[in-house]
Image (tube, rainbow, N blue to C red; front, top):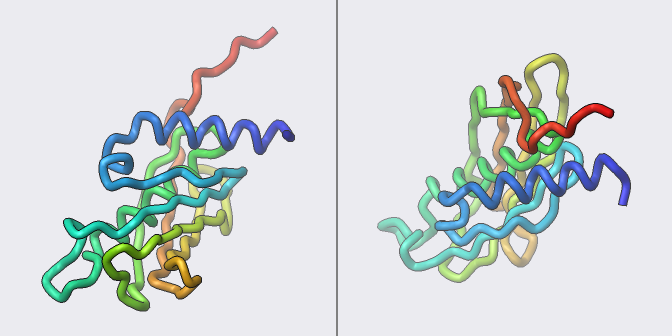
Length: 146
């Protein structure tokens, strides 16, 4: 496994392990790489809104989690500066959703990320854009210099 891929995977796993919100919604970290992440979630009954489809807040949270794992994959502590989402199609009870995030740009302290949420048939459910901001610190403890 190459060094960058290994670092990204370790960062995402560490962040996921200390993320009770994502875990509580039943999210699963499926994959992570440098500037990328895939997160899965099944739509439960308690996630439905009054029209019988998945509440948009859960879709936003799924995309936001994939975004968080992707933008922290370089072991630089990073937070959201701004996010937006477009809901394209409804998600239904028992749908298995996958949010796939990819880094679009990263320079200085900011980055731009795109997330696609699809259901188990590959149907597009939502598009999310996240802008990141690098803060002080790292995701993983820094290793001492030899």
